Length: 300
Picture 1 (tube, rainbow, N blue to C red):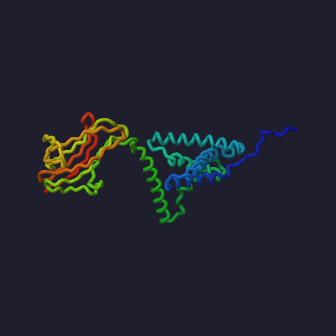
Picture 2: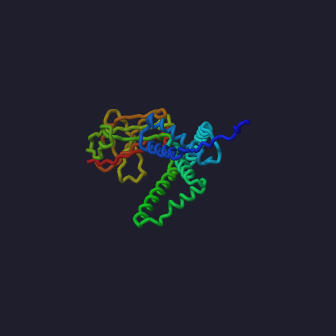
């Protein structure tokens, strides 16, 4: 008698709960532990747990699978689910990270675990669990308050996570201009000047990640009560310090490659008393202002 080779022993999915624990631990590690080789090695187990849990949720006890088939299907589903989740978060505008991709597998693992514990199918397990989750009939008033606070916190966290899709993260640095005090820190910027006594200000300009070409750094001294209709006169620097009076303007031309920066220390002397604004601007080749900075000064 020829044995029935099609009747294969049924191999259950005994480690669905373990897969859920692995995914939960991986999410915690990604959130709290900096990237390291050990976390990277653990991520492979987490990725496999995604496919294993998906297979357990879809197949359950409907088919008889060998260990090799479970391994093959789990690997294929891992690739499919993680790729699909990466596509989903990218369409939402959320940055694609290991956490954002693998965390999709955690709900799948939890659903598969409840489905296997119930014995009544996935839909029945999910329905039964949902009813029990929100059934607070036997809770005291204090316990109901605690549960309401926890559910409110979970809902708020979910809203914040989805709201990240509305935040546009810059993929490249824009041109900019920064000013510092004599020691290279913003804390040493002196807003009080003595008339005719120079102060050192460090000016840094950077072109940005994708912008290159000719730029102009412009320095203007503007009275705080200016109307905006005044004209400016150009100051020529022959030797330090740079002497400025009301509506004086000084320009420095420079050429920057993409991502390149330029830094120069200016010794600036204000030649008349009053309340002013020192305006620092970065202009591109078309004379358009691409970045600005300002230092209010009082000259006595």
